Length: 117
Image 1 (cartoon, one colour):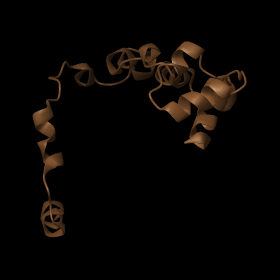
Image 2 (cartoon, one colour):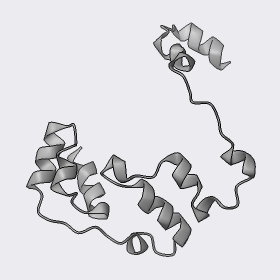
Image 3 (cartoon, rainbow, N blue to C red):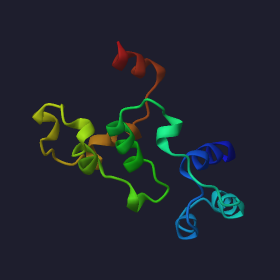
Image 4 (cartoon, rainbow, N blue to C red):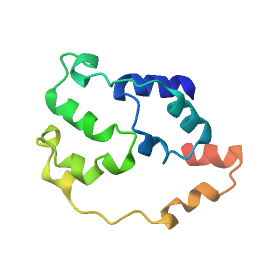
């Protein structure tokens, strides 16, 4: 976990204290609070030669603060996705918890094999 936080902060920089305070994992909060100030790395430096539209998408999706992250609907409006067929933007019904009832089923190895094959 520490190595992942280090990699993330190498790219995004150390988050602001109010953002750290909203992180649910106590150890992650302590680690980040103790971290010295660290600036983020410009995405253009980390990913040289990358499409600027792809970098704009990444910048919108990669944020410690979930309230600052793009939603899927917002992301799909970015120029990066301009060439997708219109069908990709159709409104769809939200997924219900009933559609995931299969996750609570106890399956034997034989059951899984039957489902796969």
